[in-house]
Image 1 (cartoon, rainbow, N blue to C red):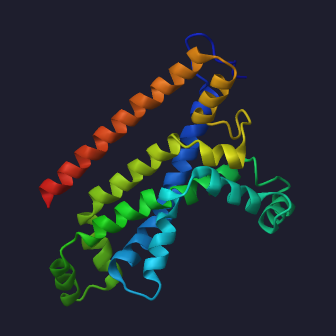
Image 2: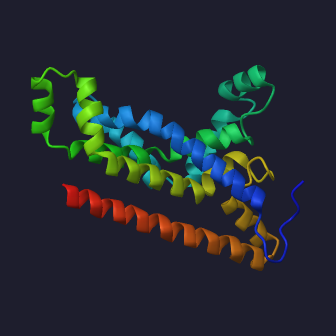
Image 3: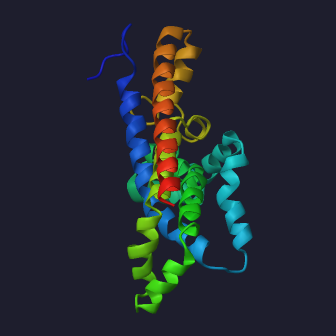
Length: 230
């Protein structure tokens, strides 16, 4: 049993839950985002601009608005929430599964946009040469596009992980603040401030500042390395 945060500690349950959420979100978006980004960067279809705008919508949409609609869609009275509860016996809203869905949707642009930019930057002549040599489109992607765009893919994954760690509005709206279930580190800071425990909030906030600085440093290093290789 984990104890409540002491004078020199942070809420480790919130830290572990945050890392778990970030890892699951990054993994799911890696599986979804790579083929989606490749399709966006290599094909033209009717309604592509609308699809790109839909993917980028979380960048400009207030988190509380997205959280409200997700809470409405996953609540026990909704069709999705009702089906989930009938299958699993648990509610989708105010659960880890609920905040995971919210996190995946909210982080779509932070994954797909860097992926698509990396794939679009690959020299088309290299792709044509690969196809001329008899490689299929899929094998060309695996052997040419993905290796040359790895820096952009890695940048997108790093940004997704970091952005998930710092999420607040969407997670709070969909999951609330249930210790060990939906109470992430950012929500824990909010709860500490509400309880006037500024010392605990300060320690957690400082940890997030250090983490964010490291992530930005890594991201800029990857960008410079990618530009140098280009």
